[in-house]
Image 1 (cartoon, one colour):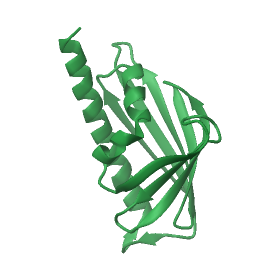
Image 2 (cartoon, rainbow, N blue to C red; image 1 turned 60 degrees about the vertical axis):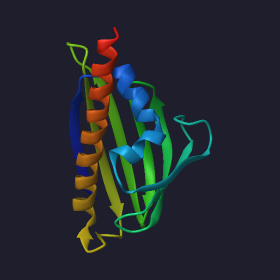
Image 3 (spheres, rainbow, N blue to C red; image 1 turned 120 degrees about the vertical axis):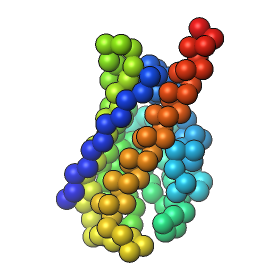
Image 4 (cartoon, one colour; image 1 turned 30 degrees about the vertical axis):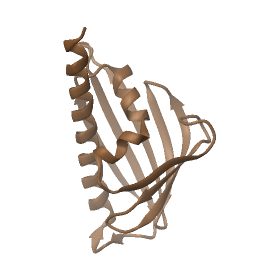
Amino acid sequence: MEYLEYTVFTKADRALAWKIFCDVGCWPSFSNIYGNIRWSRGVPWTAGSRLRIEIVRPVKTVADHVITVCLPEEKVGWIDHVLGNTLQQWVNFDTLADGTTRIHTWLEVIGSTKMVAGRDVDELLRAFIRAWYDNFCATCDKLADESAIYA
């Protein structure tokens, strides 16, 4: 089992960060690995709902997200099944004293697939998480700055 975690900070308040996070239509702008992303079962972002994510690189596959817990603007947890591995991931949104938001994610990976496209799965996941959450926060910061102009 491998354990990974990553923390980022955004100028956006928790409500805005959550709103952007929940818009899966934005996800391809955070990473170039995505093909089609769609909810396949249940009410989005509720326990038991399923998000089907087509991955186009570094290999073509499908990840099936099953939402296990969701407290809007606070935290969400899911289990993924992809390439013979199971991932449990949590994302927490914390309001800081200055109104900004800390986003902390952690995941555990269990499974038989250790290499994908000649790269270590854990290395791929670390790089993906870092890029995804950094790009997500850049989008949050931009929208927070834009909303502050009109406030």
